[in-house]
Length: 608
Image (cartoon, rainbow, N blue to C red; front, side, top):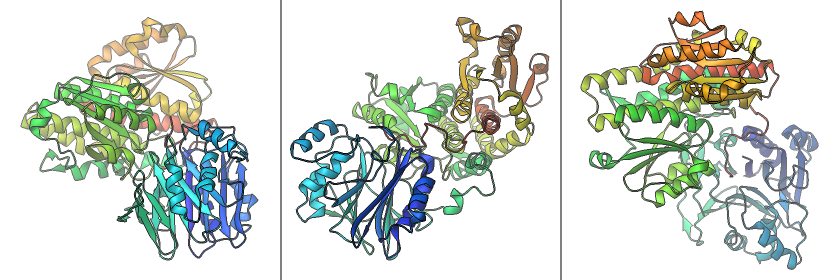
């Protein structure tokens, strides 16, 4: 949530900052602001609502002169979305301006202490205590003031700092919140996401927790939390700004749905060598793997549903008990975790706050941590013992599509990889599973091509306020993601249930005309699903069924049908979700929703 950017160089800073903030819109925000340091001190402008409001207020940046500056998109956590609460925040003497991502947990005590010292607060935010602490500790040495300030802070922060007495200089630092530096020629940057940087540079530095970056147009100097200089390690970004543009599609989400075959190819092909799954970054020895007596999978949102798919497949192939836990629940209970537990952590951004906390809790108890993430250098990737990157490429739409399917693909590969090393698969079984995995990209393309009527179906179903998804086994795991996709971008109430639970209360909600989306691709339980479909039909439900290509029995009961290409039954949920993504997209479009930036949602949930 929120986004921050910073720039110092020879160009006018404001237009560059505006452009960076626009690239970060997908993270979710309710206000935006910019502070620029010029010859006459710091000039700050803020506006609630969309960035276009700020853009108009400062005439695209022309109304703000200065070659160094910071910008912010705010998601309200402390105080309502107002101009006053928007970032940046300035000190009482206008000497300092800061932008901040994260939450300062001890801000209330700091606020009272600072008030007693005579500092006046204008906003309701936790952030304002930081700028006053800087003013309190500044005695001509900006780095020292920053070190003293962050030593007082408890919680998460990524900070960008301007000082009116330090022309051309900005300071950036972080703890438990993402922050990336951009390295240019005669100009340098920082941002909370690489997306804001790639239009200007492909050379980046991933800031570590506790590090302080002293940034001028010519140099970036890094210091650790003790103030000692550390090496600057520059990484080259493999993709460019074109990858973050719509490429002719109306929305990023539709573009990213259509990119899934290519994303899966990038995820899978480098990891299959001579007919075997090879996970070079999973360094657990065969001996250590055989000591694992439990696998736990933890994540939030769609990543959790990808983990739920993984639970079924790993358990089936490896014959090891597998739990799938919401990270927001796992972090607050007393889990049975020890050195014989493998914790699989799933996150697109690698910065999900609840997931990081659950991960730390289990690691402290001795668990081996395997992370499945998309963002290289993210917090989760750094904390894990082993990392498997999904290599999905940048995902701009808030509602994940290719991020989810590449996570599921990695889950499938992990299951086969572990089962092979545990001796659970014969050569023939392994060969068949690997060949099926290699077909995932074409399978997804087939799932798209099979259903040209999705948009027409969406016109039929978009007007309903309440929908239900039902399924069993892997179909149930896919149900949960399909339902989430629909509710988060179309704002319709949608719930997913295990179809066997219908008689245990849910069926009371089925009435005439109620839409029920029935996933029936797990053929081992198809007859039971048909019984469930008959139950809801008998009560007047309108059924949209999702079945395997070639299934004709379904026409006896379903009102409408979506077909899914056939594959190994363990892998059905991967092609199954794609038409449901398209269905959600077209329903949201028919309802006139902001598809790429749904209300109240953010791409990267970096606070609890």
